[in-house]
Image 1: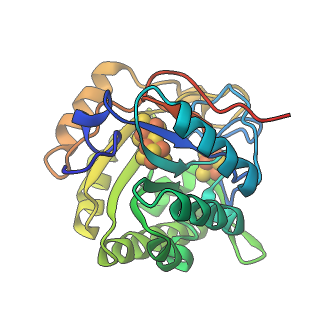
Image 2: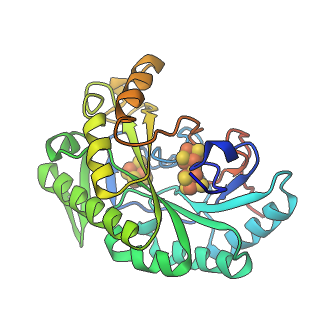
Length: 276
Ligand code: CLF
Ligand code: SF4
C-alpha cells in the first residue's frame, strides 16, 4: 500500500511514528471483553489506565511530541480510550487543530463504526484519509454474543437487534468512507469459541464493502469481563485465520496493540504524558 502510514504499510513501521491523542472517554457500545477502566481493547492494550485530555491540551502535547520525536511522526490518530465517534465534539476539534497546524501529517481514526454514517463526511472534510473500523461479526447471532448492548438514540438495544443495527451502521459507514476516498482497515478481535471460525466470513464480507486491509487481533482477556473465560487465541490459530482471510483481504501482521495515548514508532511502548 503506497502510504507512509506505519500501520497500513509494513515497510514504514520502522521509519515513521504515530501519535494517539486520548480525547475520547465515552463509548456507545458495550463489548463483552471491555472494562471501561482500561483503554479500548479494539485499538489499545488493556491493563493500562488511559489518561484523557481536552482537545487543546492534546494539541499542545502533540506539538511537543512531534518536535521531540527521534523518528518523523507521519500520523496523528484518535483511538480512544472509548470510541472517538461517541465523543464527536472532542475528536473532530482535535483533528481540525492538528490539520491546520500540520497539514502534511496523515490523520487517522479508529471506531466501532456505530456512529460512522453520521460523521464520515465531517471526517473526510477534515482530511481524515485513513480509517479503522472494528468488525467482530457479520452475523448478528454471533455479534449478539460479543456486544452486550449498543446505544441507539437514548436507548440501549441488546441481543440480535443491537448487533444487527451495529452491523448495518458498519456497512453503511465503510461504504461511504470508501466513496469519499478513504483507505479503510478493518480490525477483528479474534475470540476463541465465539467468532474464530467466522473471521474468514468477516474478511469476505468487508472486502465486498470495499475495505482495503484486515487486522486480526487476538483477544486480550480482561479479568472480570464476560468474554475473558475464552482466553487468548494461540499464535497457530491466528496464523491460520490470517492465512485463510488473506484470500479476501491483505492482512496486517505487525500490529502492536497500542495504547490510546501511544507515541512514537509502533512497538516502542512510549506514550504521551499529561501536563500537570
Ligand atoms: Fe493508531 Fe490505529 Fe491509526 Fe494506527 S494504531 S488509530 S491505524 S495510527 Fe496500528 Fe496500533 Fe495496531 Fe492500531 S499498530 S493497534 S493497527
Ligand atoms: Fe470498550 Fe472499545 Fe468496545 Fe467501546 S468499542 S466497549 S471502549 S472495547
